[in-house]
Amino acid sequence: MTVLLRTGRRTFPIPVWAALGVAFGVACASLPLEIVVLSGGFLTLAALTVIDVRAGLFALLALSPLKTLIETESRFGAALPLDIGLIALAFVVAVWILRGIAEDRRLNIPYAPVYLPIVGFIMAAALSLWTTSSASYTINELIKWLALLVVAALSVFIGRRYGPLWVVLPVLAAACAQAVIGVYQFRGGSGAAHLWILDFRYFRAFGSFGQPNPFGAFMGLSLPLALGAAYGAADSALIAYRGGRRREGLQGAAVAGAFFAIAGLIGAGLLVSWSRGAWLGAGAAAFALILFAPRRRWLGIVIGVLCAAGVWGAIVVGVLPEALVARFSDFAQDLTGAADVRGVPISDANYAVIERLAHWQAAISMAEESPLLGIGFGAYEAAYGRHALVNWPLALGHAHNYYLNLLAETGIIGLVAYLGLWGATFALTLKALRRQVGIGRGIALGLLAVWIHLSVHSVFDKLYVNNLFLHIGALLGLIGALCAPPKGVPPFDARAAFTTLSKRKTWKAIL
Image (cartoon, rainbow, N blue to C red; front, side, top):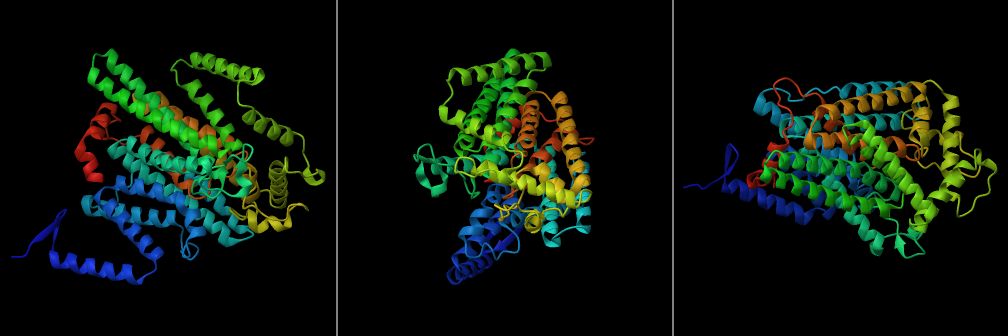
């Protein structure tokens, strides 16, 4: 009598499983270790997505920041046709679509208004193919934005079917993993000589990103979401207590405490990145959280002004750490003191700022070459040689200012489309902020602060690097899930979400 093993609706005899196990063992013994690990990882990713698409999103967002690490440390990283994030995305989306067709007999891809401005920007950026300095660079950059759109669609589907928390949790889980790595590096776990800080006692953290600035950007984009979710959960708990629902209030308080702990860990990662652009973005995001948290806007303005005055007073009195104040003051002095860096003396103290300004000037020169369509989306590095300043012959891949970068690469048309994208996103987020209550409103509040951080930090860096665009796509999909659910889909219920998360069978189904 043949013994069967059940896998969902299908059954397979043990000899089949044995043959597959033997084949896998032979492959592990004969193939290089990196190939075995990558193949096993992708098979696991596909299996998780088959079990539950939410698990696929968790794995996708956790794997995508490993792009730089794999490319630099693995012998086969540079030989892969796509990076780890895009390969993982292809696996997850393929299984998601095929499963939807098998179960529902149709493509289960929901519509959200956030898609339109994204598609509009992609189309505007694609016009630069007519004038691009490198077609391959431009096509690669367009593929990144198409991947962002796909992740947004996946997040809309998950957010509407299972609740927005199932998009928030994968984003924050990936950020927490990177924050732990960053704190370890800061304490001396890993680092290069040029990353020494604080009298050569600590290292600037960089996670698996290879550089501190994109790592700081990831921390800065995740922190407001964690704080917003914590505020929303605390608000839900307070509402429950006032309504006499003590047990629900305790659940909400526990969830709020968990999100505050997550925010603390991510905040530590942001601090040890030692990234001034990320800190400035985080400060603007914090002000946005304070301003929009109260439903009465005047109250938020009063609290925001008082907090800003308190920070300014702390700086004047000298309460804040001297190292933090010095890092900002030197940066501001060098940034405002040199409009044209071609004749500015270069020193160790001003090198980083002058280098950034030199690339700003190169971007402006590119924009003057092709003001309407630009020199090609993503082709900044390819065109840099024609516009480089004398003392700065090496291109850094981007202009260290995404607005100037877009003006150079996509011209006025692309920059206007990009500003329109985020203008529409801000409008949708404010709409969700007005409509949602409890933790749903907290998530919308956190997203609003995320967009503020992105807008401010983009003045000093390009944040769409090392697969960060996949996480940004997940956040855009999250606002699509919150803002306009289709007919027949009930609004997000915080109580039902807490109940679902507390059930053991929910986690058993995923894990």
